[in-house]
Image (cartoon, rainbow, N blue to C red; front, side, top):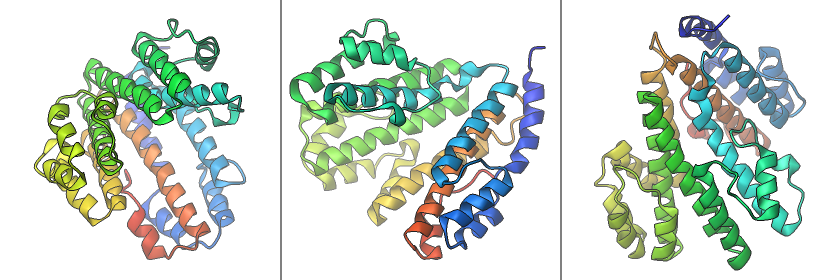
Length: 323
């Protein structure tokens, strides 16, 4: 029997009731050890394992198993696999060239088979990879082999992935997906530019690392970055694309608040564009986003507990949740 969005939406609305609540978050903040958090999450059915990392892996696996079981069309989720694809390619490039172990570093699920990536890297031939990745992979491979510049090599791959995410967002005809990946690409560019200004990166590096997209003018950003961080920040403060002016106010406060602002903007997109929708893929996409931010919350809380961070500081670092 083929699945319908009517069925999947009914299912996901029921599934949302098992997401972590603010009460759950507060309980975890009050715990003293990682072991306490692990027991709590296992009792909640969040995941299985004896460590936070194992619990997170288990939760991710459970999420994808559920989504595959109810989604009428998994293709709409393919853009989210891209981050794992590029992580795996970068990992394999460095590991194969340095003759290091890599299997425990790979991430799943993927849209590009890991064996295909490995074969391409080992043979230095990338023509069998998907078109969006093959040229970037070849260029990154040559850069790493000839210059040993891992930063530039990574930038080539990251830029190709951002362009693909934007293309997939447009192709999906989902307003949410396009808005989500527009924010991802825009703020990836902002971070690259700020980091470039701080490290005195060259114009050639910035031209390679910055992704072409609507609302981000590379020809205006690069000269500002070359003159220093302050001029660049003043330029970004005048932009309202993806609420950039507000993001810069957070950055002025501290970089941690900047990262939090970006994450909160993404979860707010899901809450406003997915949570109340009664048709299409958006409710399932919203659930996916909710799960991603649940895991981020667990990481932040457990990290704070392990480092004996005061509860109020942990709360400051937490992002909004979907519930």
